[in-house]
Image 1 (tube, rainbow, N blue to C red):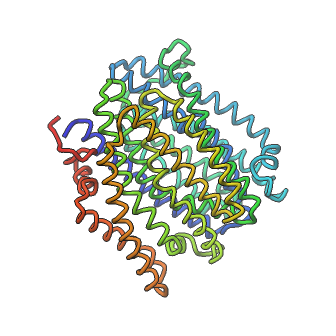
Image 2 (spheres, rainbow, N blue to C red):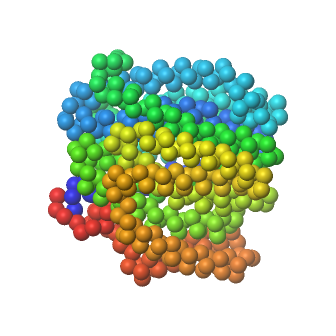
Length: 521
């Protein structure tokens, strides 16, 4: 087994474990919030308030920066140019602080205009005023996350994944603390205070690893650094790509605010449930392989680049196809198990289930996008994903306007799923023309095999839920999940799935990610 393959296997395991812990706490967080607020107008304002700060984070220090910063930093580390690497990192963190602070101030001042006219025109005046207040509080955490996002990028470029994987766990603990100890007296403002506390812990936990790797901060804006200029050149199209993606969420919030109280919250809860398998599978694999893809691209090793990407995609498909089927069939008992208590009643469960079954159809696309887009960023190409994302956004807008009148907030979720699937197909087509990443027959066989096994699993789960209608939600939710996983694994093993057979050996560093025979480093 090669060094790259051992490194990817270990990294995938660490990131997946971190996401499992983070998502588990994330659902504890949402259970606590749901118990206190249900799908109320106050909670609608809380979730709506995150749109603009999250957009700012994603445009600058979040997904946009990481996608271009890691490949450039990897180039310095590959050449063992530590001085250049630290100068680049310092310039980036200084620039991020200044830009986020200035833009955050602008958003805070403009919030009273943006909320009623752009973000949530369907909210009542009181809801709109509350949303403005919450936006200003959440922006404080965005500034902290700006610093933390750069720290995460530096550690990932050094193939260090442990502390960045723990950081989201602490972030969720901060919000849970705010919900438990501050919200009873401060209401939804207590949740916003918990967000800021969690962001501070997200940054603090990564500092020891930065010190261990010898990171040095310099008071520079990096205008003399070729690496910083390359980051600036690449980040423009990437910012536009993220902006296009975030526009989808703004559109959904805007349209959902017109569909009645609870629609925004129902979409948010449905998204959270779908994001659990998406993060554990798609995001974890994408994060773990990206530094290796960047390193291979910097070295010009195109064959290894193809092999790594193809293996990652087949692993994503093998895990997300059954997960999507499971969410559709087991949606109701899972939502009841996770959220139905306190102010979150039967009507809330049905509203969330309606959104979830449509979001589940996009699970495969969202997960694959985490991997497919990174092959372009690893090669310093940020223009292609921008063009494809812009086209998909037009489709998303048209479908949202059409389907919201047919299926309500469920139609908005379906539009999101169809749009992201079209985006992935477009990127795959371009990547196939450039690198032949799909490996045609091999990929098709893997998808058909997973689809057949997932169909068998779905039929058995449908019978199980129909037979056990009167059973408790724990039996249906957890029991159905375990049963579905066992059935799917059994069928896949019977069909000779190399992806499923490779997973345990991969985690134990016995098998490479692409499923081929291992070789000595």
